[in-house]
Amino acid sequence: MGDDGAERTSMSDRVYERLLAMLIDGEIEPGQRIRVDAISRQFEVSQTPVRESLLRLEAEDLVEKKHLIGYSATPRLSPERFEELFEARFLIEPYCAGLAAARHQRGQLEGITGLAQEMRTGYESGELSYGAFARSDAELHRALIDATGNGYFSEIFAKLHAHLQLFRLLRDSSVTEDALTEHDRIITAIRTRDATGATEAMTAHLTASRSRLRKAFNQDHRDREEPSQAS
Image (cartoon, rainbow, N blue to C red; front, top):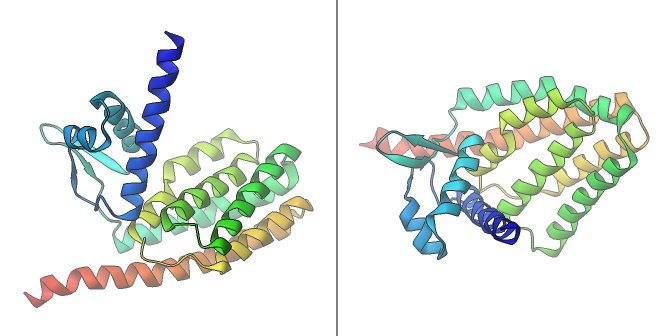
């Protein structure tokens, strides 16, 4: 029984990762319907791990379920929602970076540093896909929030689903070394327990990130409006 349960969990995790990658990489477009039976056949698995994975993705606001219709990928962010998302991030993440600098445990710092190094190694080798970068970036920021030791901040940040939403919609953006360098500055401040420096480094990172993503987001939004205006 125990082995069967572990096998089902492992299968569900694998299906979840594949679906998540398809959503981030654009293989499943925002608004596109997701048929459980079709995914089951495509992945050559039963429908149970597919349904379990879709439940997880629904909790992360990446898919939605409608009565009598089923699952579909959530729509694109509007420009207004994009700006609101960054307003929330500016309120939470710089303050949490400062707390993490003051409160982090050794094991937490090692984990954060390891994540940053994996991202840089993957980037420099050319083996880091955009979807993989998105997931690693989300994991790194989540680890920084967790290092505050305050579970409420972790819960609030998790509900934003900021990284996966942004990267899912902006998959054509390039992975830049600037973002990796900005991460390094945040981690250096946390390592030296420089709370002010960590706060400032996170603010600078979010400012640069918003600028990079806003440019790509606005271009994507314009591109999608032009066909309808032309008609």
